[in-house]
Amino acid sequence: MSRKADQLGKLARIARLKADADLRRYSAYRAHADAMQRQVEGIRAELAEAIATPVSDALGQWRLTTALVAYRAGEAQRSEAALARMKPGLDAAHRAALLTFGRAEALLQVQRQVLEQEKTEAERRRW
Image (cartoon, rainbow, N blue to C red; front, side, top):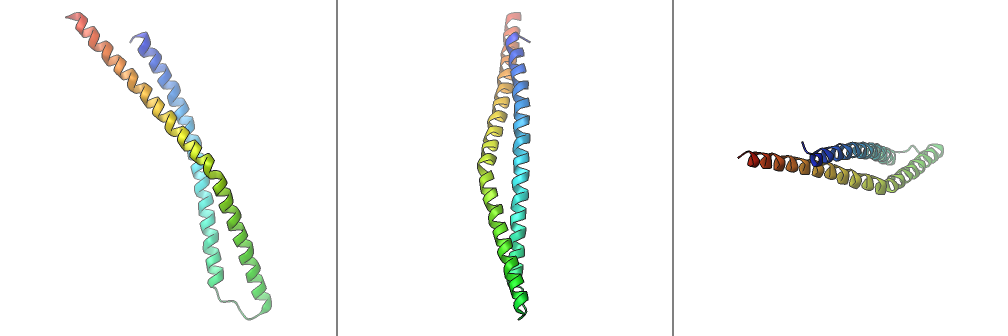
């Protein structure tokens, strides 16, 4: 293996390490965003159920149900806002992971081409 191919191999290993780190970071972001989305969906389902449930004629029960619905609606809005604030970071992590993964693959491909070219040149010299 030539020095050039060796250097490309080292660069490819470094790029792969960075790609792995970026993929882990994106995966963590994605898992957190998915958990938040499930939480929002759960709150929305609970709200729909509370709204659809008939309330007794007692004023106290009506007030309690209204307060619960208002609280959960506010909670849903806060969760959705947090999810929206998280989206730019999630998108940036996704782009970074794609970029570093592509870079690592490109370096590996270039290394393979250099090795193949060196092999071809070595065979040509023998003849």
